[in-house]
Length: 354
Image 1 (tube, rainbow, N blue to C red):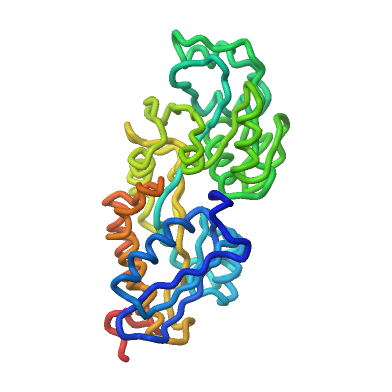
Image 2: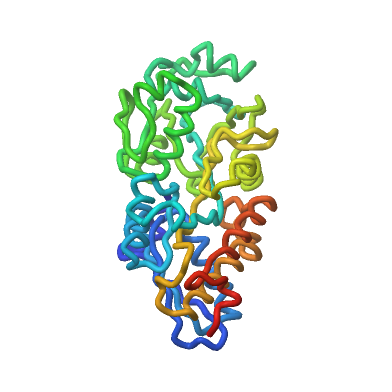
């Protein structure tokens, strides 16, 4: 999930620094969505640490999980938490730490000629649009959410992703919480079978269809919509408030999930309580093993934990400028605790003998 033009076909190579450890190299890879913020973090971190080198290959979440599982990667990026099957393959949930880094959102882009104002939608209506049960923009259920607005007598063309993606995973999981009918007929996952509408690959494919089709409605990543100046809907959240996706409203969704983080940080943040929480939000994660002795080099372990500490604290201030939502204060505290729990051969990184 992320703007594909940003990525080179072979991935991204980032160089960053580390004090006094000239030969420290770390290999990472995975999700494309966080690649731009990781590049920015690396650039800033490099100013203080010019001797550590890190390579991050933006090859998709599945590739990242495979890389960390077989330990060809030192760290991985994934937009979705590891499944039970994936955790089993990595040695069990107790062996893995999934660390939220930033959050993003899925928004509903639309093409409504002549419509002025802010389009309002909610989860049950969205589910029925994608089930093909709401067919016109002036349907009474849409009109009820947009009191006083002049909605056109125009057919709705629902647009979906044809490729497996984190965007599909987030959107379908959210709609499954809004409609039992959607959950039973379509379900949730990185790739599903849609009963109606038209599809395109990646954010760019969906956007192209929306922009060229009157009456179209499609789901894309927030940052992509903002950068391409595509209008997108305001959504009704779990507490009944209409919320526009923004860095603040997505961060509030993460804050709303704090009480779910007692047994790990890989939690769903869609459909959270909170007046300002945007309902289709999700974390992206860095995945490492809890014990970093698989790195085979204690200095690599120190470099990785130091970078992760910096990125998820000072680095968070850079997120909004790239249209990401920073971790809320409460989530940052949980993340700091998780990073501090990482070990080298069973000992805390900070106190492990040299």
